[in-house]
Image (cartoon, rainbow, N blue to C red; front, side):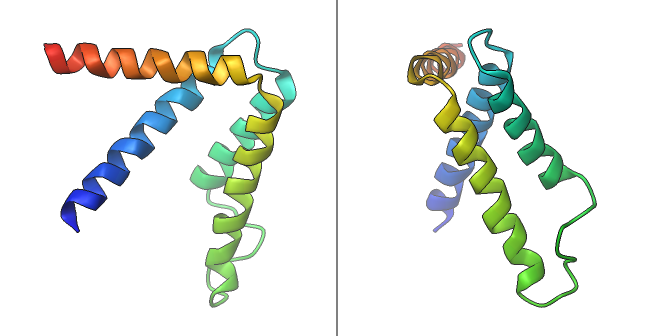
Length: 99
């Protein structure tokens, strides 16, 4: 169980690094950048469309809205850009292991 959590945390960290590079990439469309920023903002900022004190629905909005924003942003980004950013993150991780 602990190994699964460590693996999941590592994957999440890599995905965040990929999204960070995608945001900086010059071929990323501005609408995709806006959707990525909205996802990050919705995750970090203290406002919600449905308040968290409402049982179940309050937590479900984060589980639906954030993945939907990420999904639509990734649909707009050219596949070659995402692949290049993933390779760059994997290369940096491999270099860090060697040190």
